[in-house]
Image (cartoon, rainbow, N blue to C red; front, side, top):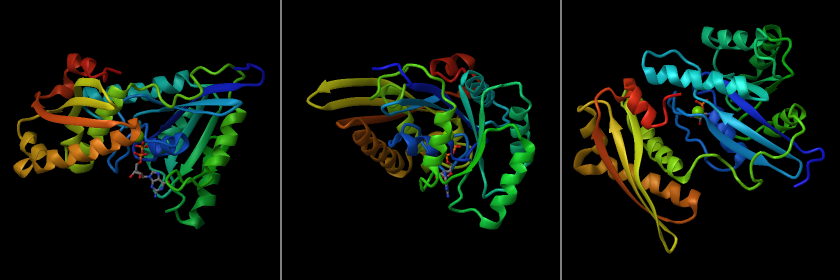
Length: 301
Ligand SMILES: Nc1nc2c(ncn2[C@@H]2O[C@H](COP(=O)(O)OP(=O)(O)O)[C@@H](O)[C@H]2O)c(=O)[nH]1
Ligand SMILES: [Mg+2]
């Protein structure tokens, strides 16, 4: 590894829930390192996605969306997002330009524009594949007014990969000259065990409704490489109330079975091996307000 002219740094992906932070990171890395669902607050931890080539390494920090919430879990998630911003080399502040600029988004932009954090800021206007073209230019102008010191304002589509190369070029300009911090072939800092928990949780988010997904967590109790290209996994789906249990299991176990198959298929593709996945449901009332449990799950922020 040569140090001359090598650039390496962290880029914090910041923004309200559901603007497309995880989708963008997955597109850039080329695999699903962060789960994505149509539901807000899918991302709970700080997740790294590492993108390397011959002369740069960009470490994307995907963060939980910045939002208000009553539960301890929500407060921890917001703390994680701001801490990631404070430590990053570059701030990519994302918004969904198919939605009007709401108060929450404006407040977030103003908060970063106030200069407390001095890293270069880039505004990313996502979802241009669905946006009204006539509204894009005024929106870009408004961003320039709200944050005139930002380095760039870039419209993209994370889902379609439009203009993502332009964003990457801009980000590269602001990375410090520094040696690579991770192996050039690693793509995330998450362990296979953590990825397994996330892939199961993704299925819960996709299949369950109302408050259930937000009050569910996944704990991997067994993760054993049994050789011959096979991994055995036992995952517990933790629910916050007795009422949720039958809904997760579904009639005749149908729902659990479907979630298990989907999660297994995704993991087999990601890890490139055969997987035997067993799922259980356990009730732990109010786990999301229990500091000890949040600590155990790595959600203490
Ligand atoms: N149309 C469109 N949808 C997108 C785009 N990027 C993300 N989404 C969708 O927006 C939702 C939230 O995306 P996600 O990446 O989880 O947002 P996050 O909460 O900011 O991480 C998902 O349903 C995505 O498929 C985009 O560029 N265009
Ligand atoms: Mg996310």
